Image 1 (cartoon, rainbow, N blue to C red):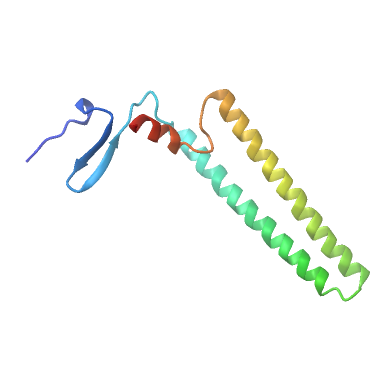
Image 2 (image 1 turned 90 degrees about the horizontal axis):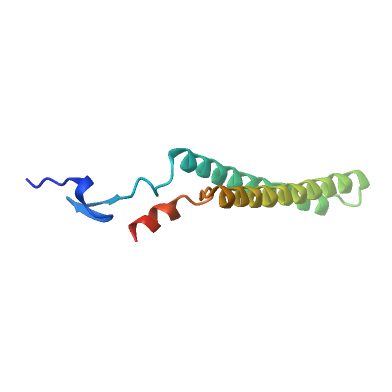
Length: 120
């Protein structure tokens, strides 16, 4: 039976019984908080994008089926406007998070980059 002491291994991949494990430099690896925050931001961005798509589709179908009724057309326009405003807010928030991550020095939006840079 072969013993592997990970602390003595160089940074890179180690093949142990068919699985590849990665050894990273703890000083350069992303923190758990960074990873959790990144996953939450990613999930919320996807959810917000899907919400925008649903709002836009509902607004378009409402407008098409309005049949000239001004109240239905106004409702459809408000759906389209709210969807567009929501998408603008999503893009602005994503940009602000990216800027904060660059200023602080954390890759908030993609912590996997830090991990793969250590392996290379």
